[in-house]
Length: 157
Image (cartoon, one colour):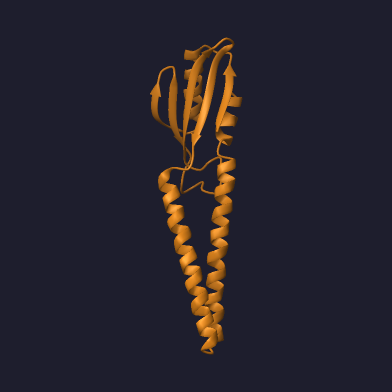
């Protein structure tokens, strides 16, 4: 999704203002093409994984001349392929672990080991809850991935 904003500043001034605001937000500048574009990395994968606004993402900003000043377009790249592969592997492991725990729990129940059956059934339930939770978080992150860009562009003059 792209977020657009029309700034009243000239393109060079808008670029400098955007760059300063990005540095104030602790963004890591990956590349810049003065005064047309700037690419940054924002957030943290480990410390802010619970917040769609603060999770690690790559953001591209494109600046073009506009009759009223400068048109600034922000594009968020989220998630990256590495995180997608990691989540797929996690879901597969949780699914496999949940099914295996359920089968072992059923076998323990048949063999007359009710406490072991309860333990493995609880493991299965936890694994399936974790799968559902990660899917829900991914949907929330996908919907709210542009919050940082919206807030940043809203503050530009």
